[in-house]
Length: 140
Image 1 (cartoon, rainbow, N blue to C red):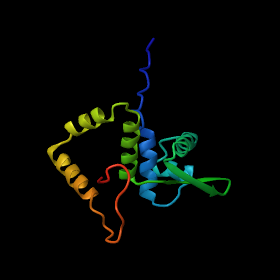
Image 2: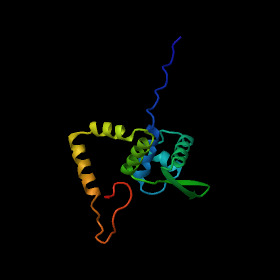
Image 3: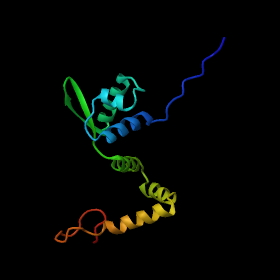
Image 4: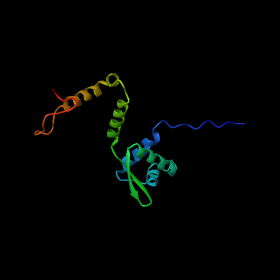
């Protein structure tokens, strides 16, 4: 009697990433059936609908009525979503300083320089008539 090997589980988030990639590539709102087609029909339409509903519940995609169903659009591009996820993880930490320090310590030299450049530019105000900065990070 032969046993069938257990089905390979996908890494967490792989299906969501595939669905988001299809939406980003399309550039227009897609129905679940259109997303399914963009993915080559590898997933059942019910699976695609479930993933889209979960992404909507997480605030990652918006949806609008399209006939009897919905059409879905990503709210942010890939970089925006990555930034949102990074911020979400940071918000979960009690010791933000340690979390940020460990993040920075794991950056490549190129990424560290890029971060320095971005932080140095963050204080520059691109609008010449803007008033003084207020809030966190503002000069006293």
